[in-house]
Amino acid sequence: MIQQERIQQLNSHSIRSGDYVLYWMQASQRILDNHALQYAIQKANEYRKHLVVFFGLTPSYPEANQRHYSFMLEGLKEIQQSLEKQGITFV
Image (cartoon, rainbow, N blue to C red; front, side, top):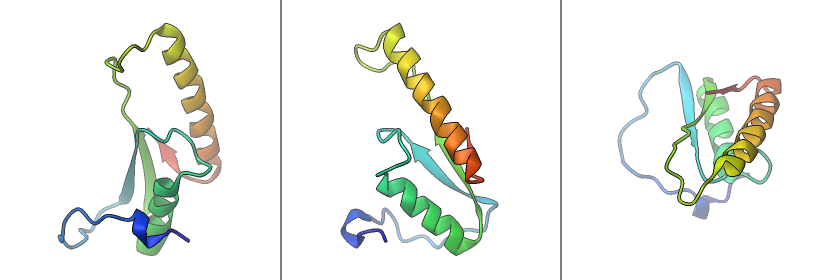
C-alpha cells in the first residue's frame, strides 16, 4: 500500500487511453523500497496496462567518471533482469 502523502498530482487531466503505463526511473535506481515504482505497478494493474520502466542515461552527471558509469550500468542490468522476471519492460 502506497502512503497517500507520497503522491503528488501534477495536473487534473483525465487519463488517456494508451498501451502502457510509463515509469521514468531516475534517482531511485532500485526495485526494493522504491515507492514510486510500486505506485506505477499498482496503477498499471489498476488500468490493466503493461508497465514500461524507462531510464535515460545522460553523459552529464556531475563529477561522474568511467568507474561510476560502469557501476551504474551493472546495477541497471540487474534491475532489467529483475523487472523482466516480473513481466515488466525496461528501456
